Amino acid sequence: MKQRSKLLISIVAAVTLLSACNEQTTAPAKQPVANEEQQKKQAPLELTPVESTNQPFTISLLPKFSLEAEEPGKDVVMHESEQEQWMRIELLPKEAKEQMETYAKERAMAVSEEATPFEGTLPFEDAIVYEASVDNSVVYIIGVTEDAPMFLTVFTKKEDNWLDRFMTMAKTIQQTETETSEQPNESFFTYKSSNQPFQANILNGYQAEAVEPGKDMIFLDEEKASMTVELIDDGADWSLIEEQAEQYVKASSKDGTVEKVTWTKGTLLNGADVYKSAITDGEVYVFVVKSGTPMRLTIFVQQADGLDPFLQMAETITRID
Image 1: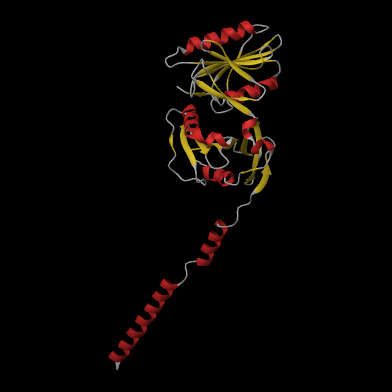
Image 2 (image 1 turned 135 degrees about the vertical axis):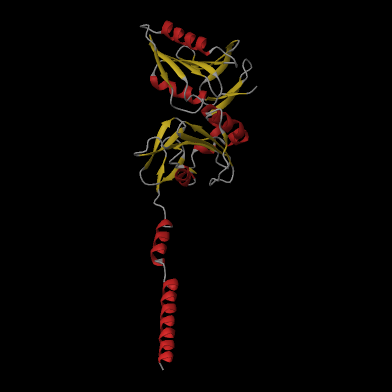
């Protein structure tokens, strides 16, 4: 009997142990909590549609982002607290997509000579994309070649990359129907210099012509507002070119003072050394552009707001060797 009792106790203990194991292995591992987290991640994004007052398009923005006009023909999407993370939007005429590869590469090289094609995925079926590292940041140059071509330039951080956030908003961009968007080629004409190997988009109302070997002038009125374009060849003595620029501005100045700044706007002009001063009837600027399309631009304007159209045209200068 004792042996039988011991055997019965052992069997009961074994059954109890197996039951306990089964309960531990089959118990749900907080699945409802995981489902709740997954549902939160898949919750609809909160997007607010806004319309540009500068270009004919609308875009839906994530919370804490805003749309601002940067200069004629360019808007930027900014975050209220992360000022180093932003995206530039530039609508282009339909004809521009035929040369998008050239434009995109030139803009990328202007940011960094080590720029490379982007190997990730974006929410656009047709796009030419480059990425360039600059210190602790990454710049993405995106040329969208769909029915509504545009340039997107995203500035973000290496350690906290917001490309996906900006693309979430960028994919909502829709061009609005206006006379400008329906007939984009009426706002400018393409000037191909017979004097230097470059072309540029010239705004209607302005003229462009060769004035002497190595110099072309774009002007509204030659006596009131003009920009002289001089391409710089490889191997140029930049210290000499900068010295000449400073001396020229000083000689033109009404009081002999020259202010030197580093330009931080635009794409092709970004990073250029700028020498400027007040003159008797306005202002003079000399831009020394060392990257992208190396050149010197000398601009005379009577009023400060007369500078923007010339900068807009300067951004379209393309070398065509």
